[in-house]
Length: 231
Length: 199
Image (cartoon, rainbow over all chains, first blue to last red; front, side):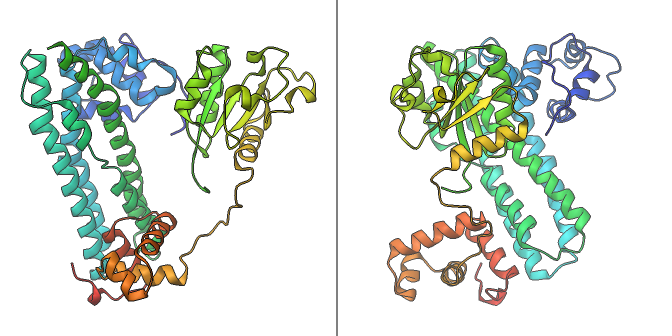
């Protein structure tokens, strides 16, 4: 995305100004379950009302929008981890319960007008992908995050973040492939407007997944490794 | 090595210019990522870790004397492009050992042009369209029919190694790697009939 505005975010900014600077941040609110209708309130006030750590919020907003102009690593190491985990979990339910089913419905609407064999292949491809993402995220929700939470409570468990690191696979690749297929290799789709809309969704989905994985691999995992050494 | 995005490193002392250049470079389609080098003490070691395709460096970092081989000085191999970042052009000869020169008032387009020339030197020319060869189409059909590498090799009387090379080239050209993705491609392009597919 080409941005017109570059501003490094801080807590005293108005929430609405922050969104104006990068409207993709609406998704951050959504993943954190922060509702719209915040009027003229500051980021800090909105976070307080929603019981979310404002420094973590600002970090996540800068991570999404201002990667190249902020020192994220330094900031991350000063932040509490629980709100970050909440965000990662929120991201999981966003993908599994909202984003992927939403794309599926649209895909169905497009391919209902096409050859049934092609339709079933495309839907199967998408369903296999959804299953892959589901397994990936459920493992994190059921194994990795509870482990991190117990570490934060000072308890050592029979697991290590290294196990997670070594099995943490790439869930972005398949989205990329689906994008290629729909964009380059199926020329005569009847509903061009809807398929365009799906492609935009897939592009967005890919960059969201990339960022989600980036936060896990480059920030969270190293931090947990340090924590493991301390306990 | 065509169509592969480049990794760049920027070695420049001025914070403003470094940040600005990093941002401008990161916006170019040919660029995968840009790494800043802030510390010049161990620049050779850092470059060795980053292994960039190109380094953009302020020649003043080396002082006025070193007109000679910059690559040798940075211990870079011949493949790595070294581009001088110049505030004020001194003497053309001064930049002779660099692969290209970027001036701070270059336009966006000029910057892109300079870099793509410097980075694509000695590489095979872009062929633009990359359709599958007839042989690759045959291999693709076998893959989609669910044959293993060994079966494909026997069927086409080629080595397994050649099958793997074909598969890699097909994946690279189509940007599709999974069998289910290739199946959709093959059906849409009428290379196979849906009835031949077991899934």
